[in-house]
Length: 141
Ligand SMILES: [Zn+2]
Image (cartoon, rainbow, N blue to C red; front, top):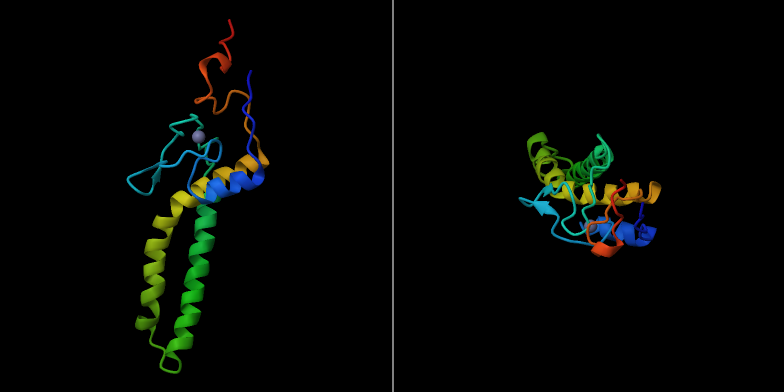
């Protein structure tokens, strides 16, 4: 069965970070702004390669969100000192907790797909959608 070459690690990382398909570079992979399509419209690569695949993306999103919340709390304490008010201190972290995961989620998913491809290159027959018809493997009889 035909195997598509996996792009270099640098290219995979950049494509993942820029919300493009890590395999072919196709953009506009999201539906309704934040939902990532199941497959790439150009190469047909299935982003969720196995059940539970996006757990790594959720962990990345959580780490970034909690890091930003920690930074905002520390900055809030520094700005409000010595009259630290819990209500005023919690406004910015609360906004971060709501907005950042929603905005970051598609990027974390495409980045996780890229990281996964660095660790587990494309399998034979995976993401052959945009190859010309003659190059596609024939069905085994
Ligand atoms: Zn693609």
